[in-house]
Image (cartoon, rainbow, N blue to C red):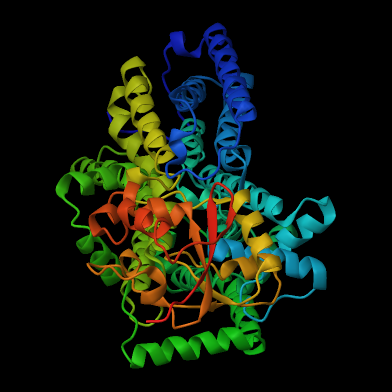
Length: 601
């Protein structure tokens, strides 16, 4: 009943495998793609909005989900040309989603680090050298090279690079699954699973750690080929792909080091499930160590960052990412409903497959004599790496020395590399007794895969649905700050929330601001009737105040921030009607700039 051989052709109802129905469905799917592209093309940029999902009509998202379901149906029930067109539909649908920020007229999909990296594109293009702070220059050199060769502006390259790496991530996952799973129908499910938006918001950001994370499945594929068969092509590929790793984010270097070490140390256990010469992993490990330590010694900033992290650890000024995340959740008083919503919308792409895998493991244990050896070997093999990747994530979350932003670790989860093949095998185990892909099982698979993909779609943009605000940077803000830096007469500046100094990094102008700190809540007004200038400036002191629409709406529109209530609409109304705020020097939809002077007290 459960004996599913890798080479067996699976039973598929003729209704689903008929070429006529596939052609009709595919034609409808491509019409939906054209419909979505026309919506994007005809959209007029409207500046900053808190929820990017609210900009486009629901028909756009409905059409995207339908395209995924059509592709799924075609891939699960066809071979040959229909399958190829189904994959093409998947690619076009995915590309349309990735094009949303650019087509909506944003300057960049990210702020903070993303702005600094665009500025590094500019710096490399102008000088041919990297900045001293740039400790992982690989992707930034690639982006700058793209900008130079193609002539597109640096922020345009910042859209293209994550677009390309998103498909590198998908391609790497598909190649890995094809290498290990073999059976066409299993690979087809793996292809569909790979198009789920596992990278979340990082599908749109040019931050190096996300790009290198997306590169890893391809590296794992090349490494697997090298372990299985050592020929000149595989030797060349593993050498090239490994040489790039030392110039990636330190967390990625740590991951690759741990992966190679596990392959070497547990080679005997791994050979029980999938045969290979795992000792060959010592070769890329040697290249990795030599390359990283050479770069570590050469790069003063990398060495300095290690000293700073160690000093902060000794002084107990840093805390593990897990504690920081728990503290943030506690401050917004998140309840059971909100937590459930967050789990399913933001983490459904991890959470739901994990449930399926857990059920399949129980089934395998209870029916271990009836499951094919092929499936059991693959499941145990990938389970080892799933646990290994889980340990790697735990180290990053729990270590008290190297802290990081929680959303980066929760979105870029190493476990996904093993989760996708495990998820595919789990589906095979659960549906094997139904002879695989009869009509009822087909519908269940479509609902499951389509549901996960749909949840990942609505969790891939930062939005109030997942307690975050849209952090896209608008042309209005860039033009406003560019004008301000050219026209200002002093360096004093007051900004309630945003890292305004990042605009200097964006423009690569080498300048700086003298940011005047203000009380963290309500502009410092409190219950007193003192003016803004009296509260925040010395007598005769001049300063500019920069207000961004993002800062103003953050605590008014985004759940979690609203509960904290640091700034309200009343605070901004009081500021604009404050008698000491009498000189607005710039106003351009998403940014306001005021010139104020301290009064005598």
